Image (cartoon, rainbow, N blue to C red; front, side, top):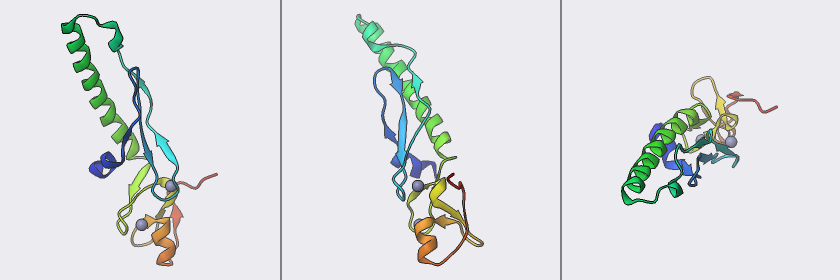
Length: 119
Ligand SMILES: [Zn+2]
Ligand SMILES: [Zn+2]
């Protein structure tokens, strides 16, 4: 599941803010992870050595933030066992036997409750 999410994770980070997003394959709504500010700005470093350290820090924080984004996304997205798409909670339906996306549910005439009823 983490791998599925990772494939869909879009890096929207810039030099200061680290943020990832995922688009629901059913309704097209975009979810964004909690934005985090990088602890150091890369522009502040002028010497080669401090630039290298800043670069490594940036990469490490980016990886940590990506891990956190994956964890967050797991609460918002589901992988449909039938069509294999990654859909948001709103588009994922809890059915009697097998939970599936809205599209597959209507195709198979399954009825169920959405994980998240949109208000
Ligand atoms: Zn959706
Ligand atoms: Zn499906």
